[in-house]
Image 1 (tube, rainbow, N blue to C red):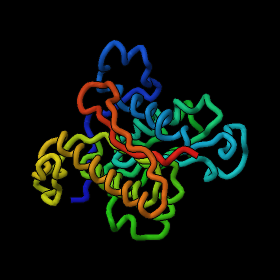
Image 2: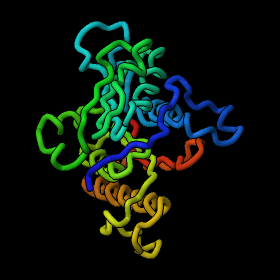
Image 3: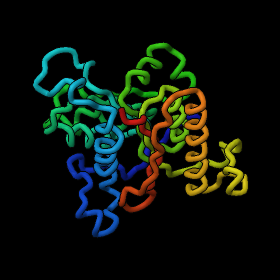
Image 4: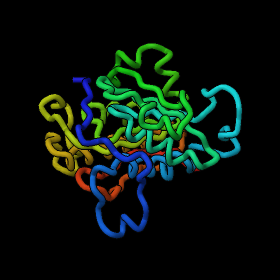
Length: 250
């Protein structure tokens, strides 16, 4: 429990992002999922309304790199999602930085983006996203200041990403894949779906959505804006359903 494992076929092309034409032709090959997910993060999770051009430094700005909006990619492995996100935003006026948290990072992130992205914009942290990692105040501040926390097929880290996003009220998105039912016997389907154990990816999606909705209702009761539940298919082969949350637009 608490360990994250990244998939073996995640070596996406960083520059190959989703396009409406490709989507209309049907699901694209799963090897491009990093770019597709990165485009979703950029266009849905970040820009409206997490990033504002009036508040974010542009790529022409000088100064502390810590000023750049920060995306945390959990269980990101080789950094394919982070690289695709950085490449896809490089031509815009919004400049991002990314941190990949993974217990088994298999390649320096700079190798994926060194020809396009300035050094220092990608960092890797060898760790699991668990209570021990979140205990230090520095780790809590990392998430508190983040523009978003995301995970593409993050396995055991899927629910912790949701929990962290809700805890710190930051935009989050996960594409669930493996469920590990034997290690998560506490999970139950919502009563409207029988209340049984979460055994499949479809069950896991229902469980996560119900968890987010309950949290949103609680936030509303406490006088906070509920924000928006995200649930859509991304259009690549395999598990392509993304679940997440974005704050209310200002």
